[in-house]
Amino acid sequence: MRDNRVVRTFRGAWSVAGLAAGVAGLATSYFVAMAMTLRDSPVVAVANLVVKLTPGWLAHYLIEQVGKLDKPLLLLGIFVVLALVFAWAGRLARRIWWAPALVYGVLTMIGAIAAREERGSSAVDVVPVAVGFVTWLVALSLLTEPLRRAELAAPAPAPAPAPAVPDVTAVDRLEPASVRADHTRRTFVIRAGILAVGAVVLGAAGRVVGRGRRHVEESRRLLRLTQVTEPAVPKGARIGLEGVTPWQTPNSRFYRIDTAIVVPAIEPKNWSLRIHGNVDREITLTYADLVDRRFTEAWVTLCCVSNEVGGDLIGNAWFSGVRVADLLREAGVHDDADAVLQTSDDGWTCGTPLTALTDDRNAMLAVAMNGTPLPLEHGFPARTVVPGLYGYVSACKWVVDYEVTNFADISAYWTDRGWGEKGPIKLASRIDVPRSGAEVPSGAVTFGGVAWAQHTGIEGVEFSVDGEDWTDAEIAAVTSTDDTWVQWKGVAELAEGDHTVRVRAIDKDGQVQTGVEQDVLPDGATGWHTLDFTCT
Ligand SMILES: Nc1nc2c(c(=O)[nH]1)N[C@H]1C(S)=C(S)[C@@H](COP(=O)(O)O)O[C@H]1N2
Ligand SMILES: [Mo]
Image (cartoon, rainbow, N blue to C red; front, top):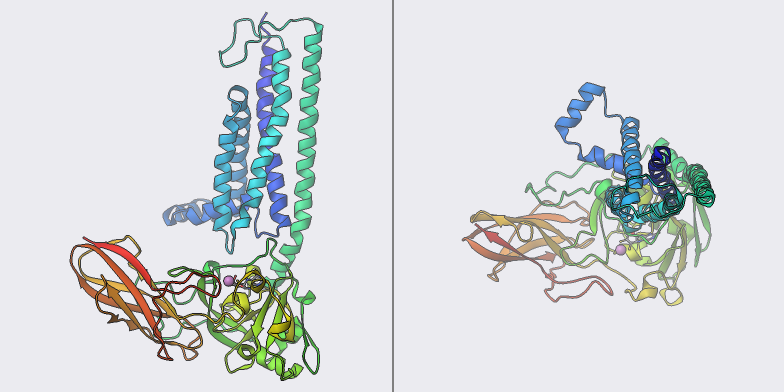
């Protein structure tokens, strides 16, 4: 006689296995995200991505229908979809054991893309989804293994089932088989139970672990930095050509480089900076001390030494903070010192030339970026910004220690790894328009981009098409400090066909940007940015 009861129970069990495995993976990924103090768990990152991808008209329609674009509602929706997909993956496993891996792979890809789209994300931010993926695979095989055994042990339906199911008709129907089935069923229930409890425990632990960052985000949100002003892009800084990188880089688009797998989450009240070493008086500055001091504000273009020719590891923001020169003067720097060894809360170090911190440039212990307290990823609550030096020798984020010292006596994170000691930013320029490989109408073709020579200033920009003579480009007005990049544009009359354009800049010392190509290691790339495009 056909035993439908057993078969039906099992089909449900496969869905339950899928669901339990799915939840377990969500829990581990959530926990890892919180332990890494990432801004959001993968699911929340996906919700953010959905919001970002929702076309304007649809958002508008939803707002009219539902009243607002509701994040909790969206999250609920995502969880419902996930639950269905998880259950489906479990059922797929019954017939095609490897099919769930594909389903999980797709979910993992979506999660990884969402994680990378998060503000200030870095490559390691995909670790939580990767952990979730592994959890899904392990948990599902743990749960489906007893189910497979139970199916083999269970009395088979009378007519042979679909061919993909192993031929179990030969299994005997005596007592031991059903005992075995009972046993494997118990194994299944126990494993599912352990996974469920584990998921709940991890979820709770993740909440506790993530609380640190949430508190700091909240403290940051509540800060009122009265001396910080809103950024106002100087008149004339924009060249007015579409496609050229915006002069001001919003915090959400600002490149991020650091060695921190876990972004330090520091409460302002727990932060202090110690200034010591070759000084008359050691100083310890609290956050309250810091924001009580007189502020300085400036546009500064930060650049990474790892920025390749034509690369985008560069950004321009309005920074607010106190002058490092003033702090060092109060500490009383000894004459024989030539360096400040900066240390961040996470132990990263850099050695900065003392002169760059004490001369007339606006070297700053910054607390705000583009008019808001520093984002956690960019060094909250305080970081150093030194115009004219690459980040790796100057722009210490989450900085907690300035040791006045000598280059001869110190080693720092990147200089230990073969990078140059001093790190002045090199004169450079980039083409943003047209894009490499673009097709543009023949005739008058417009070129544009940015050029920089922080703390020296850009005098001019030249471009050359198809190896012809260098032509002067028009450059936008520069701010008074010369510490920012400059937008440029130019026009050339071109016939149909393939073309090549290159750019070079001239700084205010009269130095012409070199065409000698050099790699980023050890102290920054050189060479002319060159790209190909086609006129149609
Ligand atoms: N604590 C800390 N500060 C750091 C780094 C780091 O790894 N750790 N990287 C430096 C490098 S190499 C650069 S280019 C800048 C980048 O700053 P940003 O991430 O705010 O753009 O930060 C600098 N400050
Ligand atoms: Mo860097």
